[in-house]
Amino acid sequence: MKVALAIACVFLGCCSNVVFLELLVKEDPGSGNLITFSQFLFISLEGFIFTSKFGTVKPRIGFKDYMIMVFMFFVASVCNNYAFDFNIPMPLHMIFRAGSLIANMVMGIIILGRKYPPSKYLSVFMITLGIVLCTIVSGRDIKSTQKMAADAVPPTAMENLFWWSLGITLLTVALFISARMGLYQEVLYLKYGKHPKEALYYTHLLPLPFFLTLATNIWDHSVLAVNSDLIEVLGISLPKTVAYLIGNVLSQYMCIASVFVLTTECTSLTVTLVVTLRKFVSLLFSIMYFRNSFSIYHWLGTILVFSGTIIFTEVVSKLRSSLSPQTDDKKVK
Image 1 (tube, helix red, strand yellow):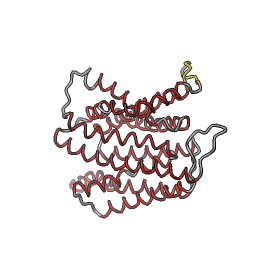
Image 2 (cartoon, one colour):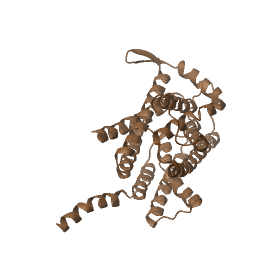
Image 3 (tube, helix red, strand yellow):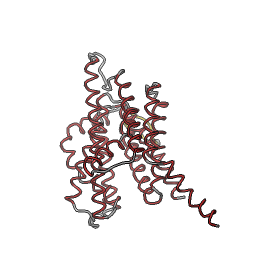
Image 4 (cartoon, one colour):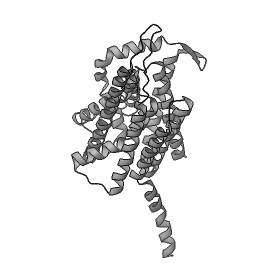
């Protein structure tokens, strides 16, 4: 029941998080920094109470080691959420982030000198091809994500292309920084052991001072959020953007906490299957519910990305190997 509940919460938390994120972006495309700060603040408060026990539990990993990881995590998170302000549609954002395996392989080869079997290179080629295809197709019909006043002059096609290119650059930077952070985490875990709850807490707590550099932007979009139209939530009138932000933060925590339970209770195969399926369901929901533009070429790119992911994680071969011991036992008998 614990595993089943965790899987259900992964789908509920992560998929609803994507819904709230898209609602927020449609209301205020520039709210990325506000969203990131709110998520970091909430998870830090939760960690301060339940992980550090109000600061009485000392961390097992040193602060100096954490600060390197914290800086990378902060930059990657800001880049990912800030990209929405640069004409990046939600489906492309999700497909692009699914390409983390590419960045992990490249960084593993460059930094750790790792070598991979041919199937891994094939899968990464498929993922790369899928992302490139979706990016090119999306680049043919770029729409501004900025809210324009009635008397404002709309941006030109070249201006839209420039900001879209900047958004793609931000996503690419975030992709490779996240991959480098993953390798650094491996080194820390080998040195100190695995402490995921602690790492989750400190990677959200320590970057909070960095948000001072974004204080003006966060304040401006907080004012916009508070002054947005009112909606009824459980009988309480709340500004629409504030309600969406609360939903996003709570669902983000549910998503992270549920994945943490899965990693401690299930095999890596189960976690990989659940996370991959969750991404695909989120993408389908975004396309259908929000009626996002999605052509046959987008579908082809999506199939390449998720098929490549399944090949890379060796889901099929692991399923076969998990069944083989039972077959062998029967033969022995």
